[in-house]
Structure formats: structure tokens, C-alpha cells
Image 1 (cartoon, rainbow, N blue to C red):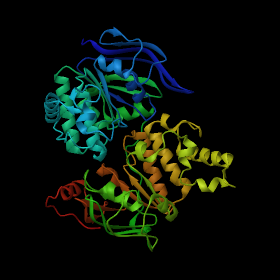
Image 2 (image 1 turned 90 degrees about the vertical axis):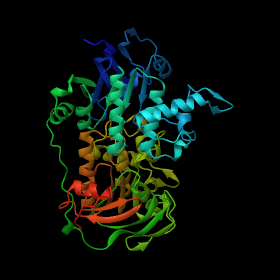
Image 3 (image 1 turned 135 degrees about the horizontal axis):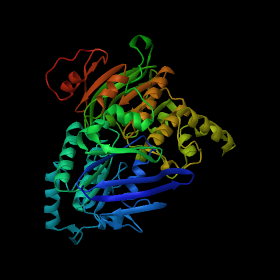
Image 4 (image 1 turned 120 degrees about the vertical axis):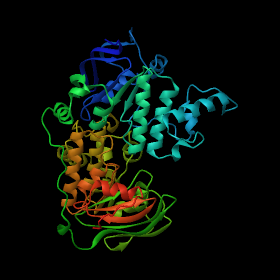
Length: 503
């Protein structure tokens, strides 16, 4: 039997009244890829953060590489060869890629990286197959590339155990395959990977053992060869669940004037010529690979980024001089892909975040009516099944799925005409995903026009009434998801010749 890299016995952790972990017993063996799966709030990320010293356990025994762990911190954990790649990235946006990779372990002269570190960076970069520019400013990179920098940071510290929390959530299929090869290399080098993921297919394909968690407890641990996707879901939820999508609005249910029309939109180098329209009660998908300009298109419509040309109409009225505040007045809402960095205000409560877009409704004589605001938020928490149902809970303490529900609640309360959704299920477990799928279809049923961007093509094709294809910043066609296969769409998005039937 391989020795345990880390061993936990009776480990528990509370955050206020919330029991994040309860009496956890777990051995993670040296040199294995060990998956942690469960719904948002099951305790996976909390367990990972205890391993790397971000959180301290309240009680229980913890041994790392055979040695008992006393006081533990990220610095001490790193000294003992344990590092973490977090789901919500923890990088310094104003530093370069190389400076972020070697932050805290760098050797430099006059503020410049030595030639030895330059060579070390290039070796790591080539081994991972990432092709990152060491001198690029981190804040200028898209999320997928920032995720790669996190991976290089762990590799640069020669970690013996790496906790990866949703490491592929913002990667393309090819980029994820590169990461799987890195993980295989780590295993061959007798390192240990703790792999936290909501993507059950990748867990079954790349991990040797899996621990299933529910409500802060371990349901079971065993070899992935003995599990199926269905068995994992049933154990995670405590009940069987169909892995299906709700039925989107039918095209014949959509009529009337478009609530959003975009014509020849241009914005920077990412959006060169995008046109589409959305009717009330319709879910319109924008399908494209990472870097195609999908997210930038939504940001330009919402006014988060400036546009260089083209036209946008909301309910047949021309909408120029766009900004987030003006979009709110026009009835246009947006949920961004980076919920923590660009969606939520981490220092505010659930109540404060949920009423940001509708705060004027609760103001009387210059003061916010706290009772009415709390009552409205409490109803939304119940409707959206947000856990915990405390209006004054710090939003930063919520799981990713519950944070996303708070963002949906913000716009439910504001009653927009158009809702722009950028990666609405990124980093969310399968149970919360289905709840958000139902919510998206329900919003369309209420008469909203919904624009959906997702890296998961199955999600876009299954939820949308119509799908526009975006390639290299341009609209290249539109398809009917009822009669077009995902394979056909992939061929078209990669610029390969294959007929795609128009909608």
C-alpha cells in the first residue's frame, strides 16, 4: 500500500453557524491523482484550503508526509511541498506573468529576473505546453491564460502535492488536454494531485481515486474505475437525478419586435463585426471558442468596455453612449464570467449585493428602508434556494453556486428586459447547474430576452432557441440547435469545411 501524502482524522471546520466540514477521515496517497467531488457547499474547497493552510481546522488530526501538522499556513504548507491552484484566481494583475510565477521565490538584480529564472520559466512553460509570454501583464490576459499562470506557480515551487480547484473551468478543450498531460507527468514524477472538479467526465478519465462529499461529510472514497457518472451524481445529491436540460422556448413562441438588436458591432481587437438580434422570451446563444470575442461582445453591449462602431438597439430605440449605469436604466442586465472579480462586491453582504441593481426601489428620503429590502431579499433567497438563507451573510463566504444565484437574484429584483449571461455555470456543480438552467428558461418564460455565452457547447445548443456562431470577432452564421449537431458547429467554429444548416 502506498503511503499517505496527507492523512486526516476527525477534521471539522465551521464558519459561524455553518458546518463546512464534519468529522472528515481521509487518506490521500503519494503519487496519485485523487478527485474531490460534490455539490457547491459540500466542503470540497474548504478541505482543499485546510490542506494548504488557507483555513485552519477547528478540530481533528492532520498529518502531512508522515509528520503531524500543528499550526499551518500557506507559507508553511509551501515549505512542506503543498501548493494550491484556486478556482477564484489569486494573482497580482499589475505584475508580469513571470513575476507572478516566481512571486516570493524570485532571485533578481535591480528588479529584473535573473537569466537563471528566465531559463526556468521557459522550461516550465514548454513542459506545460502553455506558450505564455513571460513579460505580458497579468491583468491583460484572459481568464484561461491566468489559470495557466496559477499552474506554473505551483510547478515553480516544486510542490510534492498540488491541490487543483476547478483548474479546467476556463480552459478550452485543447488547453484542458494539455493540463491532463501535465497531471500525468506529475503522477509519473511521483507527485500527488488533489483534483477538485464539477466535470465528472474528466474526473473519471484522469483520476485514480475519488472522494464524494455531501453536506461537509465524506460519502465514500474509492477507485474511479468502480464509478460511473450516474453513480457519482446519485452519491453527491443523495438521490438519482436526470442529467438533462430543460426545454427552451420554441421558435414559434417568439414573436414581435426584437428587445435587442446588434448590428456590425466593433470593439477593440476582439470584436470586429458582430450582428444578432433577440426577441422577448427568447434565449439566443453565442457559440465560439475561447478568444473568439464572445465575452467582449457582451461587455461592449452592456457598456463595460467601449465600442468602436456599429449600432445597438434596445426595444427598437437606438442605444448609444453605453455604460453599466445607462444599461440599468435601459433594462439591460449582465452576469459576467468572473463573478468574484467583476460581479460581486466581496466586502458586502448577500443583501447588499442582491439589491445593487434595484436599490432606488428601497430608498425613501435619502435612506434605504432596511426592513423592506431585507424582506425582498429573503423572498429571493427562498425562490433561488440560496444556502445559507441569511440576508446579512458575507457573500464571500458562500459557495460558487450560491454566489451565482445571488447574481441572478440581483437581476430578478431589477426586472430587466434583456439579460446577458457570460459563462453562467462556470465552476458550478451539477445540482446547481440544473437549478440555473431552469432559472434561465424561466426568465425567458417571463418575457426576458436572454443572451447566453458558454464554453460548454452542449449548454448553448441545449438551452438556446437560436445560436449565432462567432469566429475571430465576427458573426459567421446562425444555426437551429434542434436540427444542427454539436459536431457540425465545432467544424464550423474551427474554420473547417462542413455544411451547417441555417436557422
